[in-house]
Length: 325
Image 1 (cartoon, helix red, strand yellow):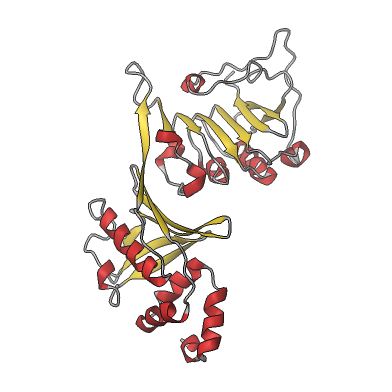
Image 2: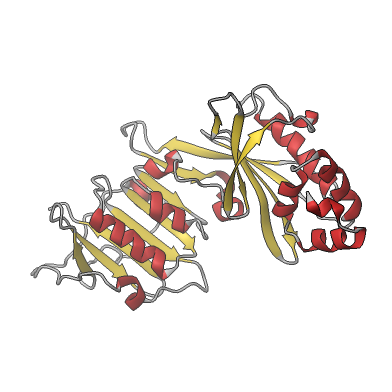
């Protein structure tokens, strides 16, 4: 690598301008690079690690730069595959990007395990990676936090598919940012997320269930508009209702969300146009009395099957209701 031939002061200046996840990738390039990085870069970072136990175990390594939290590496038990020549590959998430890495570990015997992504070895692998990162960034080691994502039944009388997800001790999804497009959470019949944050874009892109309520979301207008376009052009037979409440300081622009959509007038009704909300989420979240009053909403229609949906939109919330008749 050319960087190894630069003078010491130039190397130090380069390393000091790289982000933590960039330094991790650089340290994995060669044995020599792994050795000189901690020696040249004397700045210390406090690295923390958290494990989320669910149907697909996940972990996140993070630090703080100033007052801002910075996720430097996400790791999970899936996405391990072999190439035709038998080499192992693993997809890691660095910052906002996913990188497919070949796993050889010739220079990292402490990280080498036979069943690299097995659930039995998961905690050991995370511990070894944490030790590696602490050595790289001159960080004192602290206890790895463990959280559990629970899927539970609301009542014995409910069918197996009628489940909802919740988080023990008000677990903050926004804090860890670990939801991927293929997570089974997207297939939930009833989904309630207490702290959604920027992950709302992932949910609006990937949710395939029936009812969902997202609280404390950081939703961009373009994200809500793309969700509506997705519903119009694709088939979502299960979907009934999506309700998004914005986080304090985040606002919707009604004109921007509805831009380019073909809006239809709602049918004329003598009675109050009230949506028949049939989700058990009503037991878990207290809705305001006018939540399901759709008389003030606007309608869109899906050309493929003629199905109609109502949109209720203010600066603080986005509500989407699909009519079954």
